[in-house]
Length: 366
Ligand SMILES: [Zn+2]
Ligand SMILES: [Zn+2]
Image (cartoon, rainbow, N blue to C red; front, side):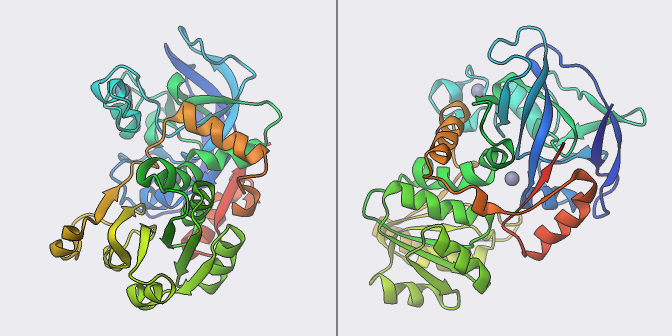
């Protein structure tokens, strides 16, 4: 049994209750969760708007780290006692996309099942009051224990702070990965980042790591701009008329732009703030069904408009790198944490994230 926050119905507060967790099966790992960040995607799922969450009962949470408690048959890369970050993507390593090095697009069966909240064999290890419960993207870290696929477990040093490294699994790898993996920003570039929440701040620090020399942060909340400066923004804008505001700083627009708002109108203005040859990455996920108001002629000037799959990460390459950058003082994780709360207070944390008052709320377990 494990204490967990369970979604019983969409739109209602999560219920703190005991769930039954079956032992890990072949290729699976039982992890005692140490910390789990609260992400906008959790809110989306809680509201019933997520394409990656099935019907309740559900256990949300996908930005986590913990300690291996037990391993199933055939697991060789981790053992009990190992400290791990739980990656959002546990690539199979064998499908066509993995074979071509596009592991962020793994199309193996385990990956596809995980997206719908099931284990590789299409079942779940969780139940609440005898009813099967699905863990969000095969993780479900708003619980004391989670059973995850071996490929999602990325071992980290035992002395590394798990409450901070948890954030690397989603917000950090998405933001930094969008810069380094997706856009491949070059040294000396100018970069525009629109939306300075938990992910946007990581786009900013990704741009710093890439050697961008002009980093313009835009948001509609002044407090977020102050935080953006701490993370390395060279200019900040209270977003109003983006292309014109950006043009005053970099004539003709920036080399790169990242929209982290998930709003198609903002994305269109972000795109319009890039110069010919510029690249725009859609990092936030807009609601389905809204067309993107971008004039096709703008693409003639060799502009690129791209999506990213969670920073196009290769978990076992990128998560240890992020942990190492943090250890060397080159990646700010502590500054992302607005509050640490126990699981019992998770509905308060959800409310804080919803209000936009925090960069990241982190659920910490004893
Ligand atoms: Zn997330
Ligand atoms: Zn694969």
